[in-house]
Length: 171
Length: 211
Image 1: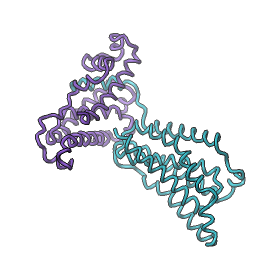
Image 2 (image 1 turned 180 degrees about the vertical axis):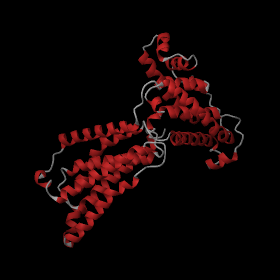
Image 3 (image 1 turned 120 degrees about the vertical axis):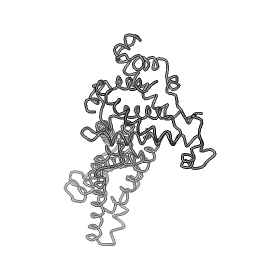
């Protein structure tokens, strides 16, 4: 974790892959019970872990910190689902426990969310994620400076996290 | 986008070292203090007898209280910015109030009852109620901005502690110009001003610190 935070992206990627395994185990069972698309919740947690990694305190155990962020994001995701049906049923708790097979409307397609980024942001995210380019390679390919690629990538991820938060409130 | 692809994007973005939240908060506090000190120097002035006042126990006591509040609030703030609900040493926040209550009791015992009211009312309660919040605005704004980079388990609490710290900074600066050194005065008017700043900041925290 410490090496990851100092900018070692190899170590960081390994850490994230490792964490994802654990996250899936936790999220899948609970999300299924609540009728959520589990993998979307996993991705939302990963984004939050990434954007908030400065709140981990060096030298303290990583697990409680990861668990706290995962818990917060899961509560958010469940609550959003509650809001959908809140019109008819007053209590969010009731909505959650009633589990009225919501025909998977809550399945937030990240692909769909990518479309809400601007063109540049989408190109950069695609280049480094789908195509696996480094920031430098992506910069050459998109004819941008490496710094601009980094800034755009960071902003895109922040925007994605924000979209995760707002999507259900818009329709 | 598949999860492994997202991870690749995150790892690419993680190629720069991250700035820990406590460093953001420290920077924000220093910037806020500098701005408010600038405001103090530009618009206010220390009380004329400041050179003598620093040798009186009552003045020193007042400054010790506000500084104790500021440092204990600063101490617990970084924990409030983290996603874990636990705040270590939160009992330290009681140090300043306990000191203040002790000061009030001491004053009630040592000063004749007929002068309690004059001391309590003091010279400038309205100044106190308006200048402390005014001097707290810059630190509160800087701290809330830094907290937005955090992941507070309880946004209202994090905002409240930021407000407490900002209020204590404002009160420390205001103490330099305030002619009233009575513990009764401080316990009443300083407290009201700081609590007001804390409440507003907690309200704002609840609104803008969700993540």
